[in-house]
Amino acid sequence: MKADTLISADSVATPALDLHVIRYDSSHYYIFPITFSATELTEREIKECEDLLKHFLADYNIEAEKRFDEISKEHPTLKFDKDHFTIRPESYGRQYMAVASNNEKFVYVNCFCDPGAFDYRHAELVEVSDGGNCFFSFKVDLKNRRIFDFMVNGEA
Image 1 (cartoon, rainbow, N blue to C red):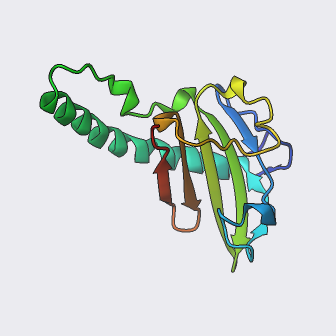
Image 2: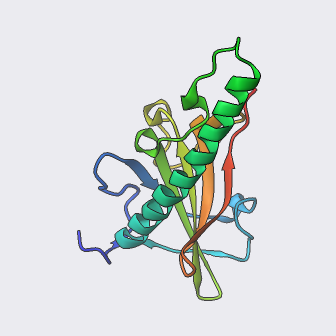
């Protein structure tokens, strides 16, 4: 597929990723304002989002490892798992939802562990309460090449 080909299918052939494009509609008003409109994504735009995520998580994981070290020192009798602090994106499923507003394009990216557990992931957003770093999401401003509204789910 050429880099600028529009993605209209529900999934993208990106090696080793379980990745699906979900069309935005007004029922997702809590993600983007209702005035935003659905738009398509190119493979190049998806790769740009993945590249931004890779760089963002490199910094995120440095801070997460510092938190892990601090908590481990504060509570030496407790055994913490560093994997509960850091995020390794290669094992996460992804859902992409693109919108446009005022000639700008934004993308909501929903990430989750164990994608096979969500057989509806190609058609509906995977939404859960809690789950810790097994579930996280963020938005991408493609014009300014930045991630914003990054959120990791809490733990019950």
